[in-house]
Length: 125
Image 1: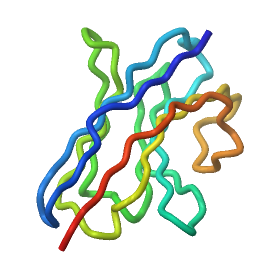
Image 2: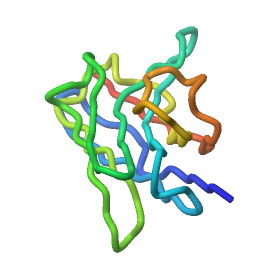
Image 3: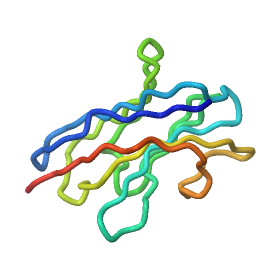
């Protein structure tokens, strides 16, 4: 049974950093993606960063590329999202997600079956 649990959200000033962690367990080691999504009030859920479990390859959405960085902590068994140079528009609920794939990781939330409960990030100017 796949279990995902986010932690590390909070409030931050623009330009500062936050790190989110997703404690992930019970997922397949092949043909599976882990991802971070976010959703701001009144907006659609947006794919932020993708992690293909088998190869460890990563991908980032255009709005966060160069500022956010994914890493896997094998000891803590977490997928961490280091968020740097935060902007007010990064304010959102952040979700960890997981899903099977036959062709690579997707930015569409429809491709992910497993979701954490989310952690709130608020960035003030």
